[in-house]
Image 1 (cartoon, rainbow, N blue to C red):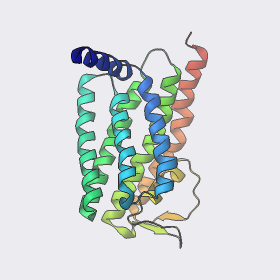
Image 2 (cartoon, rainbow, N blue to C red; image 1 turned 90 degrees about the vertical axis):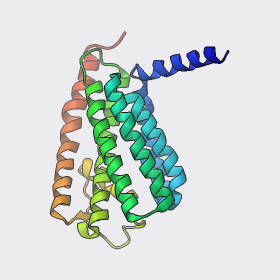
Image 3 (spheres, helix red, strand yellow; image 1 turned 120 degrees about the vertical axis):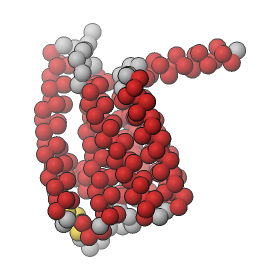
Length: 232
């Protein structure tokens, strides 16, 4: 009986992992994490339990959606375990060094995820709705990647960014960095948070370029392919 249940659970897991459905799950968790969890909890370590749960879900969904290749999946699993362990260590200890390690691990995970997700989403083959959702997920992962890079730079040099009075409501300002990242990615640029450090300005410039080119070239191309060859 246990063996039968194990085989059934394994078949369901493979059904999700070895298909494009994991891309949709990743997009759902990212959307909840970025637009609901962080605004409500302000991204503070003191609220780390709830933030950590969603962060864990994103890591698991990222493993599921990243790649069907065994070696690539093992690499993303290893990085995800390191990122998850360092995140919960930071939640418990709340030290600056712990936070820097956690942020660096998260940045590496999101960077690796962008690479493998892009390879899966933009690979040859039929274009379906899940792959378009995956392309949107890549865009959100890009925003989270830069948010962690900004936070790491802030932890290393707090003067790297200028916050207008009343802008910063948490310390360290992870929720503000998430907001600043997506404002930069979408090139809205309100000016309430300004990059001061030369390296921070380089990161901002690069993110602005990626934010313009990615949806205009890659997502538009994917949607065009889907419209030309709709899946029957």
